[in-house]
Image (cartoon, rainbow, N blue to C red; front, top):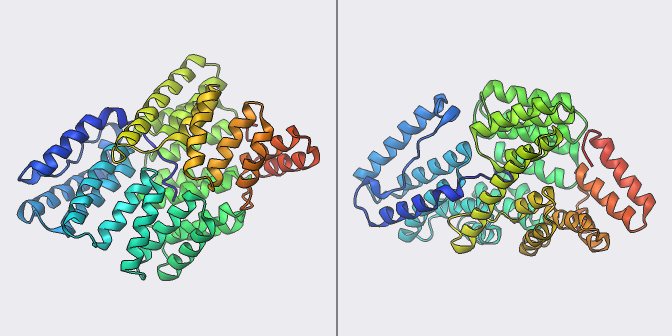
Length: 433
């Protein structure tokens, strides 16, 4: 789901190594011809599963040394890279590494179903949503009974704002194979359409379907906790974060979640402590973005500015890399727009919000982002149609409702505006407006 939402700060550090790895990959003759598994550092290096990951990688490399043309083994390597990207947050390196391997398989067999699906999955991670949808449609033609195809179609259509098609794909997926992946997608679509109880029910099913300690189960708990946060149930959200940390110690998104709860309770030093610990495990841009606010709220403007500069520089590098070579980065315009809003650089926020919204004009998050920029610029009239578009699915995201209310009030629709703000605050009374 929405892998979307998890982006990292590695791009500027890995471009050279990716180019070098690509040269070796396509020109060497032995097992070093494939991209390498990077060493972990810090807490992740002490994770007990790291030994198993390395052992599995060594086994795959040995098999490829013996049978360098074996497509099944090559795709096992690609999946190892993709999972390592999820765990470490180093998407820039591992997306490119996985893509190199998958493309080699497709060069040998252009109709290889699993390779096409993996390539679509990588494209989704890189925010290449239209391209991912084309690949998923191709995979559907090859095998209309393969449930994973419908998950890819669901994700691509959600990101493109084609929600009816996303619902149809999710329904097909869950009827073909009800599991953690299909339940997660059903949950997200219910959330998008304003059915919070239904979204909670579906993600609880996803959690129950997962294996304790597995990364995907822990991520499903994060979604459940988020839904509790948006339903005025902080105690239940905190419980999910704590369970995730019991099952998967030092899970950075659970640490960040506890930081958010501390922020809602206005315990900013404690919130900073949690976010700094999360950042120490994984350099995810979302953690830095949260710290920008926390240091400002805690009366530490210099630290806030430092976090903002680090994050903006890294995401700009990623964005520029994607513009030059889409396989090397991912489009980061929405994240950059949010960051420029935080630093009051409104012209730059507008530039990136427009780029994102033009890339996917029907997506409710892209429309909300651009509406927020126009409102901050004192142009509520320009925000009206965009905020209406962002509400068309009847989403109950509290921050979106509050923004819609502020826009309505600014154009003179006072009663409707006050009602929207009250609706948002009833769901999330601790949010900052």
